[in-house]
Length: 245
View 1 (cartoon, rainbow, N blue to C red):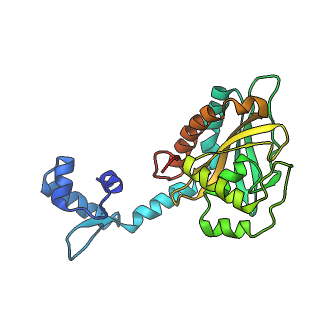
View 2: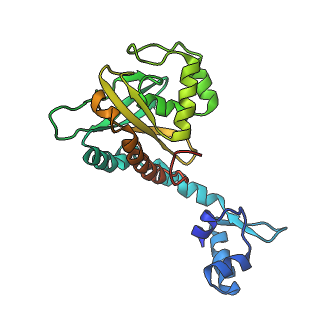
View 3: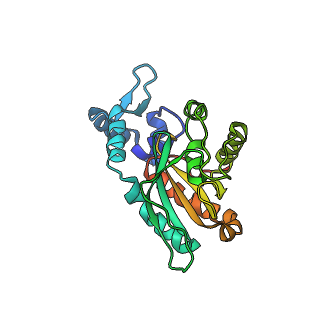
């Protein structure tokens, strides 16, 4: 019954509607709703006599989310992505006006990319940074773009208009790309992990030598979106996938 409340588009449900959907008698539904109501799991509108989820549900959900470790949840996806693409996969989180790598998985091959864990990079330099920046609320993006856009390499985007256009493309597509914007000779594809607020709490990337990455970015983008969507759902995000809206 609680799953029906959670998945139904309507904010409130009636006893008859619940009974018909679950294949239960109204008497049974009334008894279940009474028990849930006593625990604060559902609420009754005294005017419409319809039920909605109660405040305890939010408390349970937030408690679950607070106990989740994004690194632990994302690691199996980093391993899977690295195996599927035979490239390095990374996890980054935001730190003020920067983002930092907090984890990586490297493939078993002679020529590969490796990142430095804990080193801060601007939120506009590289695919991981742009994927994080693009999905921030518009007011946070505006505040960031009001700051000087420092070039990390000669290919780092420092023109605000060009960067805004690219951020819009990233939100439409769901993932970002870069070639040489953070590190000369490196290519990357990145997508955000979103939480229950649609807020980007981390970013997963696939990266490798630029010449190799240029040929496979589109295919990697699809695999990446599948991986980040799975992690996002674990972190409370309701959308099935990111991408064109």
